[in-house]
Image (cartoon, rainbow, N blue to C red; front, side):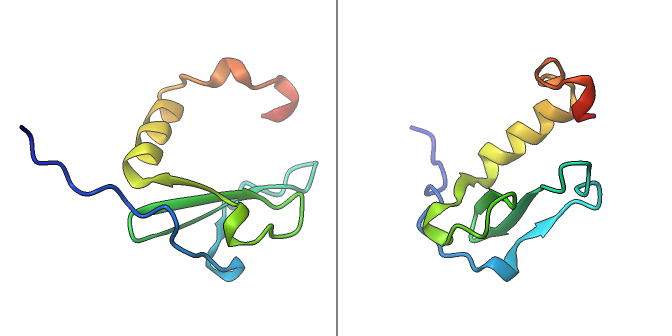
Length: 86
């Protein structure tokens, strides 16, 4: 049996001022994805709408989000984007 770290507690609370956005995020739509990370959890929300409250943001473990970022950097999701989005 392999010892695995305990899963991150996805119920960790986030406040709006903990979120950051990319410097690339002020495109023609004005919206962006904001991220926050603490206690092994990465939280994500779109600021096209007002901050939805900590209970309404999407949460991922650092491991899950790292896997996503690695795949995105390798171009795995490029076919999901349109020429207008880039």
